[in-house]
Length: 223
Image 1 (cartoon, rainbow, N blue to C red):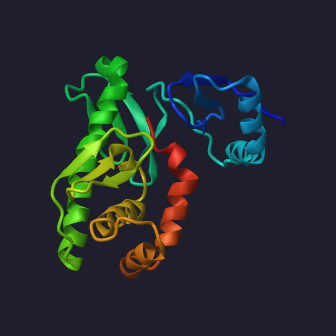
Image 2 (cartoon, rainbow, N blue to C red):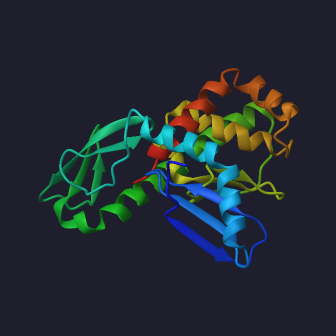
């Protein structure tokens, strides 16, 4: 095995799980009473999968860079990278006009300011896309909520509530539409069987390409 497990968390759980973050750090979650032999056997069984994921991360064309909120950094919005400009004498913390303009006085709050911007735009645009597809195809939903979820782009509850991560607004609009349609279809089909994807395909014939973009580039959709 050509990898190292950085963190192992033991807790009152019954199953084993592996998480690999966008930097390639491996996190293992195991039952509190699991023996070293059981842990090693689990890792051994999943070694090929781990190596495959690590290779994918290593071979990415674009590497994710943590933000420092300095001139020239690039931030994603609707699938495009836009430059950040740090400016003086700007009363509004953040302005977007084909580029991002962040007031120098708010640099230390850059993360929260960008997060609020993305949440605001996600609420506006995702609500608009939901209404468009719901009206066109007759979907009935309850409430819409924009979340800070890191693991799930969207979800649909048994009560018909739709949840979407604000991070989704960094993706191209056609990818946003895919997640919106995906969750709308869950209102009438809770599975991920062929019947479910047939319904998605009737609305978005190229949904596989949109889904593939998200699978390959989702690691970039964060501040």
